[in-house]
Amino acid sequence: MASTFDQYQKRKLISSYVSVVISIALVLFLLGCLGLLVLNAKKVADHFKEQVVVTIYLNESAKEVEINQLEKSLAMAEYTKKTEYVSKEEAAELMKAETGEDFMDFVGYNPLQNSIDVYLKADYVTNETLDGITEELANKKFIEEIRYDNDLVELMNDNVKKITFWVLILSGLFTLIAVLLINSSIRLQVYSKRFIIKTMQMVGATKSFIRRPFIGKSVQLGVVGAIVALLGMGVVLYYMDKTFPELQLLQSPVLIASLFIGILLLGILITGISTFIATQRYLNLKTDHLYY
Image 1 (cartoon, rainbow, N blue to C red):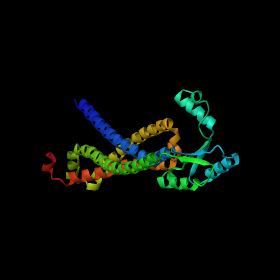
Image 2 (cartoon, rainbow, N blue to C red):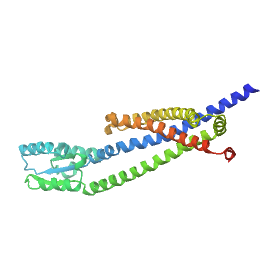
Image 3 (spheres, one colour):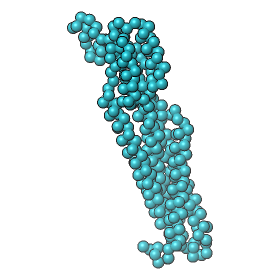
Image 4 (cartoon, rainbow, N blue to C red):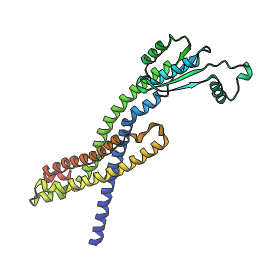
């Protein structure tokens, strides 16, 4: 009978530990994923900004030397990520591929113009910079027109600011929720041992002696939970990098390592402090109050 009871108690204890580990792991995993989002928010925003194209349309009278000189000067400009010369023949082929029809069969000639597509670095994708580029190139006689989506640039910059603000707000809120949830799990764990704590205190054990094993066990559970969370984060990061290779999510190993270490330390810190507070509470309670 005693053996059966001991086995029951052991299974109950293991089940309790597993539930605490799962709670810690889930909370730290979600917090870590949010951290990955915060770290890569600028990289994602920059990726979309660098898809904005400034198209410079050239006159038919433009000489090859003028075009080459313009393309080289644009490529060397501090705001340029890359340039691409598109002849009117290439433009016609692209339009044919997009529409599925050869428009030259209807008009009898190619009305398109030679052009240079300029892709800007993310920090320079602003209306002020684009207006400055337009003014700088406007005095060149062989340039017919400079075109870019002004509304898209303005909308993109506004959305980036809004998203950044809310991501920071959510990060702070979620960190607070993570602390409260882990603290709640640890307090329930300590609550189930409140009578053991009080019994040890009644036989003369010091408060530090009583706290030590509880804090040690909670920190162990915190480490295990953090490791499980980090494994989940690693899987998410791997598949995100495979799905969106252009974002180069794995190109910042120092930042990623810092985040992983931070999640591990957070798991240790929260569990340790929560256990200290919870055990201290029951150590200071009178015996009669343990039943409430």
